[in-house]
Image (cartoon, rainbow, N blue to C red):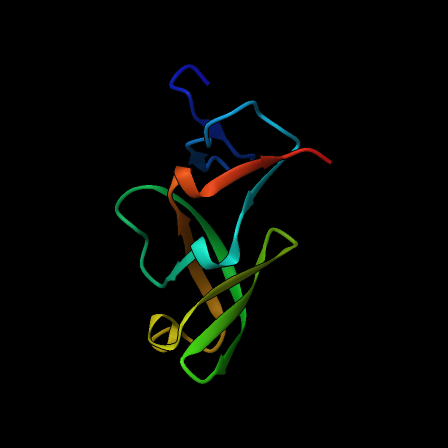
Length: 102
């Protein structure tokens, strides 16, 4: 777009990472935040929390975004207040995303 961002088919606007655009936008699972409330700024998309898995001090969330599986990794306390399932927000900073060519 003219402002340097991208608009997804659902109208969500995201800021692209640096570099030449590729086929896919990739974000490592440990760089994806999960929240019940919409973040005030940064890249964010609405997704469905499918399952939370805890293993000691760490946790992971299995999510669905428009039919695509997404996994987020973090510390137990980051995910403890999330619902067992349901709608959540995924967020990340543009510097943590990377273009990938398939």
